[in-house]
Image 1: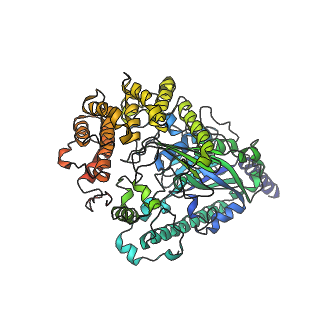
Image 2 (image 1 turned 180 degrees about the horizontal axis):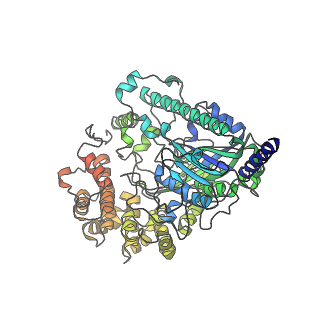
Image 3 (image 1 turned 90 degrees about the vertical axis):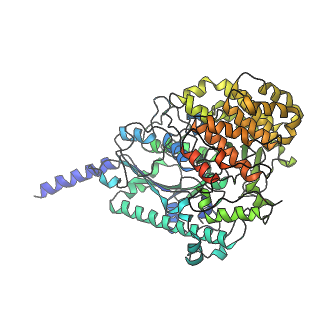
Length: 627
C-alpha cells in the first residue's frame, strides 16, 4: 500500500512539474478606463486595494497605451499585434471585416498550437476575420477551469463591462436620487470640464465603478489560488482603452489612449522577468506589444509580420524596455462619427496631427450623447457659458497639437505655436510624417474606397503596392502645415491631378485653410462640388465650399447621399451634413430632402438624428453656439 501511495505521489509531482514548465497567462480587462481613475496611477482616482496588491507582487507600467481610443479597433490591435491603419482594421463598427495579413494569425492561435488551452470570456469585437484555431472556447462560460487536463498551461482573457461607457447612461432620476460612494464634491475635475453638479456626480459614479473592477480582480486572484495555479500564472490587469467621461473614450488624447497596466509576476516564473517584483517602470508599451510579450513568456518566438515587440520574457532586458519612449495612436470613424487623427507620444510630449481639423471633437455621436454630462456640456456651449478651454471641444481644431503631458496632464495648453517648443514640434511632425508614409497608412484612402475596392482581398498588400502613392498623399495633406503662400502652387497641382486621391486631398487641404483658400481656389471648389466624376471628391469639395463660405454645401451633399449606392460614402457625406447643420448658422437642410439610396447603420444613425430621434426619445437641439 505504501508503495502505491509513493508511486501516486511521484505521479502527482511529475504532473506538477509539467504544469510548471510553462507559465499560464490571464488577462483581466476593464472596459473604457484610462489611468486617470485609479489612485495607483493618478492622484484623485479610486483606491483599488486588490490591483494595488497585484502591483506589490508584480510590475506597474507607467506608460501603457491602447493604440486606439475605442473598443473594436483597440481589441483588434491587441489580438493581431498589428497597427490598424496598416492592415485595414482602423474603423470602429466595421462595414466590412479585413482579412488577417498574409499567413499571420491572432496571437492566441500560436499559444493553442503550442499546447495551451485558450479561452475568452467573452468579448471579441474584432474588425479582422478571426480565422480558425484561435480559441478553445469563447463564451460567457469560458474559463481555464474547463480544461480536461489540469496540467495543461492556459491563456485566459476576461473582459468586464462594469466600467463601460453604458454604465454612465443613467437618467435624470438616477442623478437626483442615487447616491455614490465617492463624494461628488471632492472629485478632481479636469480643466476642460464645466464644474457642475452633474459632471461631479458622473465622475464620482465612475470612480465607484472602479471599485467593482477591483473586487473582480480580487476574486480572480482567489480563484487562481484555490486552483493551485496562482504562482504559475502571469496576471495582466489593464483597460482596453481610455474612458469614459466626455473627451475620453473615442478621442485621441491621453484620456483616450493611456491605460493602466499592472502585471503580477508569479513566484515560479519570476526568472522570466528582468525586474524585481513591486517596481514601477517608465518604458512605453502599447497594445501591439502584448501578443509578442505573451508568446515570449510562453517560450514561443513571436510571429513575423507584426508591429510589436516583447516587454517581458526570457532575454528581454528591462533596461531596454525602460528606454522605449514612443507610442503611436490612431483615430478614424467611431460609429457614425468620422474624423482622421494620428498621434505620436514621445517622452513627455504628445503630438497630434488633425487631418480633418474642421471637424469639432463634439460633433454628434448618437451613442456618446446618451450621457447626461455630454448633453449638459453641449447645452452650456450653446448658451455661451463655457470658458475657452471648456468650449474648445465644440470648435474646429488646429491642424496640429502639441502637449507637455507632464506639465499639462489633461492636455489643455497647445504648444504647437510656442516658439520655445518649435524644435520639438519639428521633430515630432517629421517623425509622424515618416511613420504614416512608411507604414503605409491606408486611411489616406477614404473608407468608402477601401470597403468597395480593397478590404475583400489583401489590404496590407494593397498598401505595400501603393506605398509610393500614399507617401505622395501624405505630402499633399501636410501642405496644410505650410504658410498658404508656399502651399498654393502644390495645392493647385493636386486639384488638377488626374488621380482622384490627389484631387481629394487637394480639396481637403483647401478646407483645412478655409477662408484663406477661398480666393485662390473657390471657383475650383464649387466646380468640383457640383460635378467631379468622383462622388467622394464632391463631398470633400462641398466641405470646402461650406467651411470657406463660398455657398451652401447642403445641395451638393444631398445629391451624393440620395444617389450613391455606397452606404459608407453616404455616411461620410452625412457626417458633413451634421457638421454644417449644427455648427454653421447659415446652413440648414430639411431632413425630408435626404432620401438615401444606400442602407447602413451609419446612415440610419445620422438620419435618425436629423429627424430628431437620435435615441428615439429626445428631440434634436440646435448645437450652434450663441453669437
